[in-house]
Image (cartoon, rainbow, N blue to C red):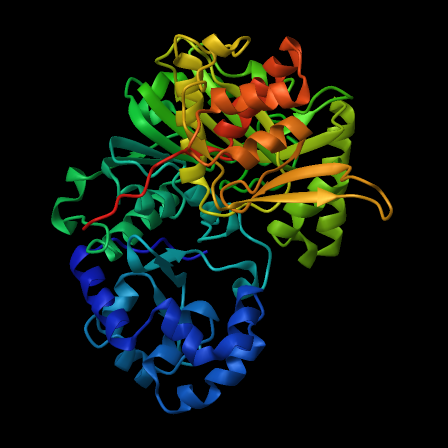
Length: 527
């Protein structure tokens, strides 16, 4: 494994100028490669891109050279490298530890530098270790991941309101810190791996302009701390914590431990400890969001263990996105580190996974998202959902809108909804938003619809089954009448008793929190 890149501020400024001059952006790469080669590259297939780049490389195209060098990990000639690094110089690139000389005198990348485009920060570049495909073998233990599906998912579920302090716990290549710097005054990054911290600082300085960071005064906006989990920030509190911890559940007797995903602890202990201790680093009202795995034993609810982990002063909203049996789980993570490139090693590691899960009685492993908050109200928020359908990312805004609605409903002086007078929504004027559709299902020949559904086309993409009364209220919610008035009218038409009417109010409260009803805002007209 090559040394980590060097975070030399002046040299990185020159490198950025070279990337800009070559047009090294996601859009330009896609335009040069075309849709077929671009899609193949997203699947870690390099041959289509090599075919497309053959002629541009022969013509000395700098963009083609950067793609070939840093994305395909193919050596390029010295003349082309010197053209690419016009500002940095080829020797400067060697001094940054981003390229090296091959035995035949060509120039080869020592790391992956990929383009990364977001709506907020614009075009950026992210350095990481080379993938297993680029390396030609399974990933080493100290491997530093680049931008992958998990890191993108975490970025998409993290709240983006402005905060004073944020913590990127287990920063890896620093991608979460780069997002946090857009809306946090100060970001602390931690990792047990010094190599990861080196990559993260390299990436922040490489994109300093887009991140509004003064490269000569990095400490004004970024604090770098080495250490395990919460230890480096003991005694500090933050308004927001984002973390993709090493949650992978691997056998403790495994011969290889990948720092980016495993800790060597038994089972889901690392996730359990992190959730149980998160209140120590959250300021009042502070939030934390994380990706996590958890084990399940026997026939109980998937969250029966998870719900006991947060302290009494922590709110929790956990969403299980999928689950896997022990064999499926082993296959996922052995392929993730490309252990399948060595069949004997793969078979041995697979057996270790199965032995470990069987010895501890694990039947399923859950995969999902966890949101936590240091509670300031007397009404605890404890929600556990199993949502496997498509969600409309980024989902953070919809999630936080639901939290805000929950807080309103359950902190109001009247909240139970047992009667019309003590229902928090009673006097509100609500509408069924345009992104909610109504679906009816019935068998051929049936006189009436047998299944009524409401489906949301935004956020979590929830779809819920309705009864006749709830469907009637949603259909009538156009903002003209209060919800209390509509419920009273529907209850009268359908002859609902007090118990049924209370159940209707309770169901409408859930639909309001989940985004199927929104506050009516009359359109204003100007003369």
